[in-house]
Length: 349
Image 1: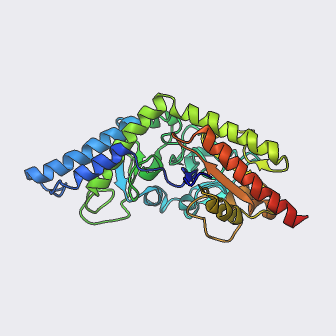
Image 2 (image 1 turned 30 degrees about the vertical axis):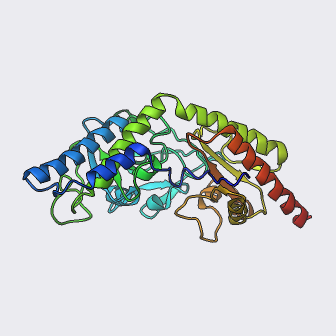
Image 3 (image 1 turned 135 degrees about the vertical axis):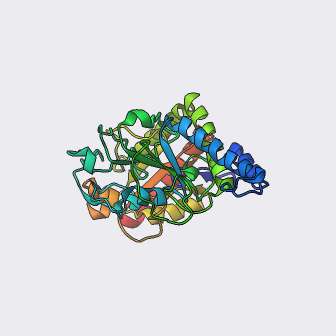
């Protein structure tokens, strides 16, 4: 390393975009409560509604209802609480907490949904990057990882509800949204003042919401201009470099459609959390799975659902890239990872 750290954990949280920072800071000076009818309140309301429009445009959800929440986890609870929906074992913990995980999943992480109206299915997996084909009539979809990286038009997906998170696209942490077909009945889980069309009470986080809207607009622009196609090329360079030095390592989901930035590699016996620490010391930020599960000593529930045995499922490393990560960055990562792999092989011999 040249002394500069390299951030390769974009699926956990993307760096704050300058557009989002500017919108967030500007909104902090708006005094009014967005539920107040005076001029100051109307100014705050205008920021919230501008962001709602920006998010709708970026999601292809014009004409749908968008409910701002504290994040994707709250949005998932709002969509799923009190419903007897089924899903697969690959779903994020925020979804898995509410569903019966009985849907079959093949070795590449693809899910079959016999009855979409009674099911939830993520559009892409945060650990493996595997992208799903959403069936028509799906009840709920976790759009969090696909939003900003894949072309998404909610109005054409054919699902009743979806949810997203701001910090996955370079917005502020602590704000997300549920998007649902207009007129769909939905009971509030947080009750009180009736904000967000009566679906989520509590004064809106105006500054974070303004940052979210700006980030959504910028993310849509980047996607349209091919930024993620460039990221995919660099991800593939990294995959080839790692395969060349470690033919025994499994690239999870390689035979399926994947997010353009995600690489999940499994070297059986070399614990994922050990690799994360070793690469951190070498100057690279990576993870061993979903950020919400990191630090918990257990094998990946996602990889187990895909059929990997426990030893392999505990040996996963996720590298997730974003715009601005260079070919030189990933080749330096490959070199550092190879050095640690040689030490692991020597100890295991």
